[in-house]
Length: 414
Image (tube, rainbow, N blue to C red; front, top):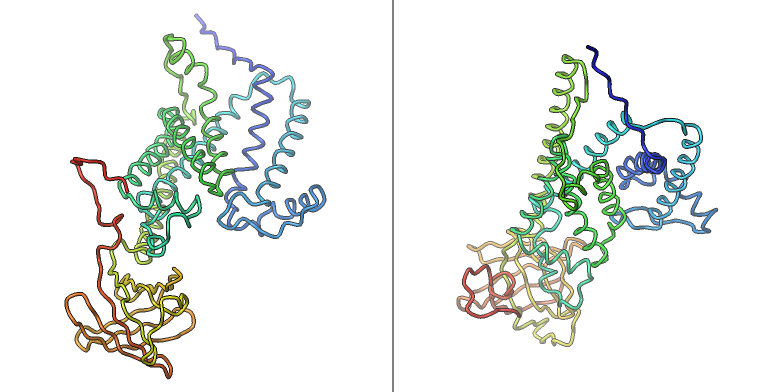
């Protein structure tokens, strides 16, 4: 008895049109997103600049530079959208009799899965290694809250807690890892949608210039879930039983399937290895620049040539000295400006040197410890004699010293 071969289901006209549009759009956008750091060299640059000048009467001079919401990016979005609409119309006319795009959809979803998985791992590992949101710099801690930008406030909030970074980064890593495998793709995409909705709202609410890119990552996750929409509605809303998804092999031939599996494993391992190695390297760089502990010294007296420098002289009078590492310090003036200096101290000879990172200006001091916390510095800058008295205060920032408490008898909200 012969077994009937099932006829592939026909897609509705609307489904085919939507597929054509998003296929072209995302096939244009995803590679374009890789060139965001090199926009002036990307194939899109000439098209974007031409469109900006001749269509919108805008001469674009600022390229993507860490901000993904520049005029360049918005014009590029219009260009990609226009190309996609035109291609959809032409494709629909030429290929209007086709029943479905099952095979093309199969490989398109693999392309989107790997792209989204990579980006989720990038952002997840950046949080785990705490390189996206480093601990608050000294300058941030010394800045009044009202002077923070909305984005700076978000970065300060995220940067404070290593635990919360591990939680959010771990969720992104989980989502990205699940997307590599077809049996767990739906779960990975659903987790990605939840994560990206939250990130998108943060970007909109705190004016973070990654709104376009985060919105597109959400769109990619939704497109991956879209073929399962009917099954999800049946299960979650209609309370109906659903059959397991028929997951066919990517490669039909058994031997070729082995090589496909090996190639897939190599690709995943290379991606993970590259991201982990770069993450560890970046973690060391960030840790050197944003230390979580430092010594604070409050300047109680500042004299030049024996004359007291008044506190009203906000650009010359020292306010605080922060020793960040064994060779870096930050000097804060009365106007709140904080400048980093190279720092060297010899505790045996009781000498201290501050050398400007920019101008080469150097202070060389002899110091004496009057008591456990008061230091008196004596030195010269050019022909001027400098006398400084400063008091050590390592408990200045409550944000650093408060810590975590299982038991709080009363709310401590300051």
